[in-house]
Amino acid sequence: MIKRDDYLNFLIQLKDKKIIKVITGIRRCGKSTLFDLYKDYLITNGVDKNQIISLNFEDPKNSIYNNWRDLYDVIEQKLQQDKINYIFLDEIQVIDQFEKIVDGLFIKNNVDLYITGSNSYMLSGELATYLTGRYMQIHMLPLSFKEYFEYKNDNNELKIYQEYIENGGFPYLVNLHNDKNLIRNYLDGIYNTVLMKDVISRNNIKDVMILDSVVKFIFDNIGMIVSTNKISNTLNSNNRKNSVNTIENYLSNLVDSYIIYKVDRYDIKGKEYLKTLSKYYVCDLGLRNYLLGEVRDLGSILENIIFLELKRLGFNIYTGKIDDKEIDFIIKDHEGIRYIQVSLSVRDENTLKRELEPLECIKDNYPKYIITLDYDTNNYNGIKQISAIDFLLGRVKL
Image (cartoon, helix red, strand yellow):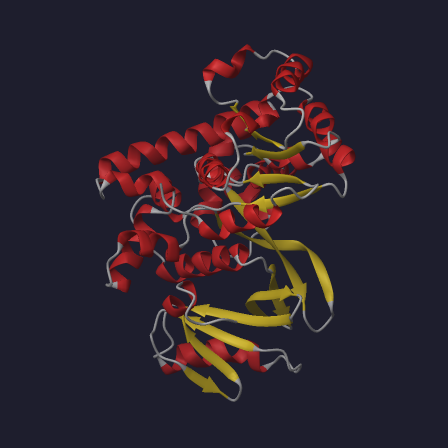
């Protein structure tokens, strides 16, 4: 198993805290493995196996639980009355009214509860109402470049980066030894499972061909400003008849399944959030390559990877607008705001000028960065150029 230390340490910090730990993320990103790593930690640190109750609802043997009440009764009977019980419910959203199980277990003083799900529906509606202020979400992503690089144990950073953007970061792929056919088959399984279980079936989608076209459009336009009107018009021009409302619903469904992420725009000069024209990024570049073919548009790919790293680090992320110019990312955390441009290279003078210009238009004093695949580091009147590889490997902080 690949250790996911950042996620594991987060769970360790929350051990025995009276709060529900909710791990979300796209299927096969490593949620179940994280549970296994954490259960090993518990046993190593003195927790008896009988104190651990673990159910994975993607396992056919657990399909015998037809309703939440039967499942709740089974779990309650297994509880050790005089000890803390560590309960792991994996992909719990497949059980109807699962929020009643979660709520019932949470109120017990001798339960430490952990759940996972592959759709943001799990944190909406009734569950959110039941558990307001009583859960903490850990959003899990496929392997970061740093995790992938450390597992590969190869010091050729650019070679491993190229492999990473081709294969993607789903953890099991490292066992396939760069076999392109096996990797493609594995990604095919993930893509079709996510679409069928977390998008099509859950949302009762009838026009699967339109949905597939929307996915391909977004995958092909990562990091680009897009509108639902543009997507609708493009599909209509290709004889894929649809409505703007349908496109909006499909995009929302795809975001809910964690296959894509939406980044809203912020008008820096007007100091307001804009309701139209967002950017989208994919959860994994390997999945994109599976759907679209060979690796291309390396600048957009780098921007997508930087986005995922920023998300992994816990920043609030927006794309910026100042007059008629665009800022790739505005990020916010407890330390304040930073502005970021991402470019494959700025060794060309015209490219450098183009990337600097939007940042130079911002008149506040928050830090400004250009992140490139160049190993160069420079300072342009306070605008810092840093290496993407250094940033992704944690050698440089923002």
